[in-house]
Image (cartoon, rainbow, N blue to C red):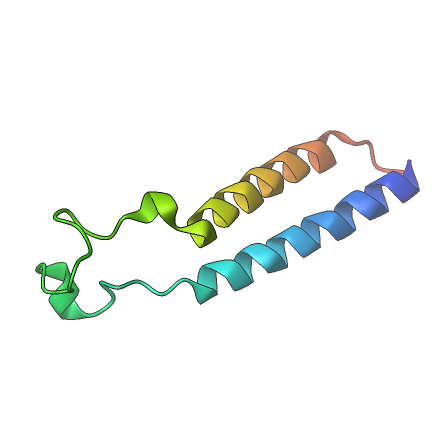
Length: 79
């Protein structure tokens, strides 16, 4: 059980670091003050089309893995 918990902890830390890096790589087109008032040069009428953004999809999958690993690690007994 100790080896399994060690491997899951390693995957958990790796997932967390990958998610941190991916979130920091995402640059918002509306990051400045002008973007708050609609002056950000949008791609569509209502803003940027985020459904096609692969970074957002990868972030969602990494977040799902993070939550799953956290729940799994919390249920494993401590030895």
